[in-house]
Length: 358
Image 1 (cartoon, helix red, strand yellow):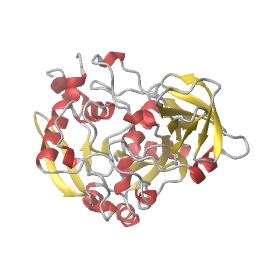
Image 2 (cartoon, rainbow, N blue to C red):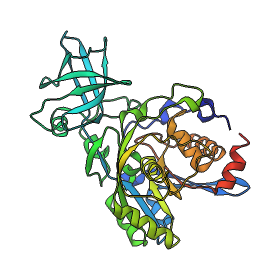
Image 3 (tube, rainbow, N blue to C red):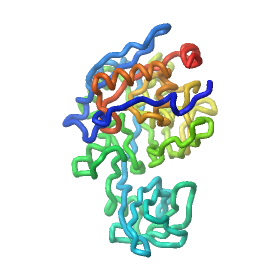
Image 4 (cartoon, one colour):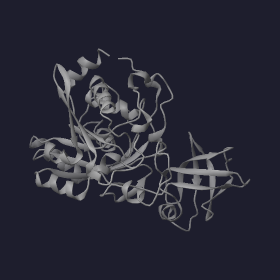
């Protein structure tokens, strides 16, 4: 199957891009996509709080507990020119990879004064990112927390405000390191989590720190040439054990967000799922064989993005096209602060039959 960027395109009216969260997290809409063998998928419009009734006793929801850091900084170069720095990921207690926007790129060995508070040294380039050394007197994350700003996605056309400090974090965020929120988790509040537990479902946790590369466009038409950005993850033994117990009891493993799915499927590529930490650059396209995840909670994704490719692999390309056309027609809200989907995975033989026809 030869795939190109155009296979994952769709038309989105700009006014459907959510610019702010709703007053209540679980008040978002939920589009439920259920496969039907030999027929078009069943699409059901619901409210996100109704997810509790979609979860069965014995199911396991796997959440990403990463926390968004204050990754955006403004400053000046040695020459006096303005710069904007967006941390991609820390690579030690005092160093980070970052995107740097300036009229002229800073040179290796130069220094940037950030937030009118401290200086960083440009150590060089790593691909499209700059390698920066921060002051050694304070931990990098603590320094960012005091002087940086919350990095809202590029399609939100306003600066981060006080409300975003809580609403662009999940209620269970605890491991700092991401520069973008795992947005499927933004819909969960404590009341909904309690209702899910009352249904007899279990929760488990992992950590995947989302990098700024998640917003980078795919720049090649031949998808076989695309290389994913790397992201760090940690999967505890307790989560591996919970997945094994769920499988043994006949329950479903439900990934809350594409980040949870990427971590689980990356860790299972060499065989049985194992606990541990690592980095993944897994690129999930139609034809991918899922090893762990049975259902997925996810937001709506940008046209031509790697996440559109991921959900198309999971649900089927035709099913996702139908679901997104329905969402646009029904005026769902899109992207980070938008509405969500609950997708049940198709069986592999149905995936092959439908996707080979594309």
